[in-house]
Amino acid sequence: MIKQGSIDRKRPNGYQYFNMLKSHLNNNLEQIFNGKIIYPRQLEIHLPGNNKIPCNFNCYHCQGRLLEKSLDNYEPKALKLLDSLEGRIPFVIYGGAYTEPLLNTHLVEFLELTKKHNSKYGIHTNGSLLEKLEKEENFLSTICQLADSSEDYISISLDAGNAESHCKTKRLKENFFDRIIDGLRTTVSIRGNSSSPSIRVCYLLNNTNSSKIEIENIIRIMQDIGVDSLRFSIPYDNYGKNISQVIKYKNTIEKKQDQKFREILESGIIDSSNHKPKIFYISPECQDVEKMNFQRCCYSYYQITLGADGYVYRCSSTATPSFKMNRLGKIPDNLDEFENLVRINHNPYFKPSTCIKSGARCNRIALEINLNMEKIFREMKND
Image (tube, rainbow, N blue to C red; front, top):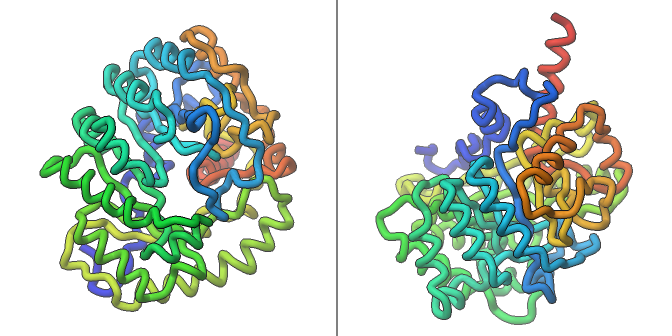
């Protein structure tokens, strides 16, 4: 239990990415770049919206806002591929660099195949369609029934504590905030006393939504609903910008806001007598672009991505035609072709600087993994 009036700086187990990679590799990091095919911990699938539009929101902070947003009708191939994998990849995550997965009519089919083979699922959504899909298709009832572990989860990007700031933050003209709150209540109600799936809420802090009153309000709402976690963080700068712009954003936005938001979150607004949700803050230090000077990228052992444009990509951060250099090939419908792409992805000679020069960069997961592996590589070299 966290101290009364403070924010917990320790990330939950589901956010300790290097430890998660080590666990996936059975603590044998010598497997990395040993020439053998090793399936990654997770497959991220960016479903192509509703095949007409990628997303029904237009968030200013969306990391894919400046990128090309091509959509492809690849779902039949991907479903065959997922079935042929037979659980070889333990986690399948449904999100998007620029897409909203709940727009896609095939999402439940993908989730059913994921659980058929005993993999865990994750869903990253803006939450706007939760209530609507439950009424029309029993969507929430279905995902709660499919879940068999707290490692299955649904994560909602809320990013506001009231309807007004939600409209401003998401650049919307109508009130989706109350619909999302209703959807969260319904999800928790349907789940009942079970711990699966985990229900996570993310809150990206900005000048519009970060008053003490608004943060207190969202904490009270989330405690009342009974979600499992509430994560605060600062938006990453948009992808597609050159390195000098991103460094400027770091120095003028991230650093200043980091201090401001820490003070607010540690000023006594949290009632730790309520064990739910787990409330924590992830500092922008975890996404520091100036730390991305490592020589090799080991993220391929953690994740591989099916992009919304019909291609397999090295990682979720670069899954857009704007970063064609990170395409591994077209999405296949069979295991042999996919294994070849996994093998290509384990490339010790790939230079991470390629991404930086193209306006791409690591997400928090990749940065943490690569920084730790770089240290290990240096220690091995010195032995």
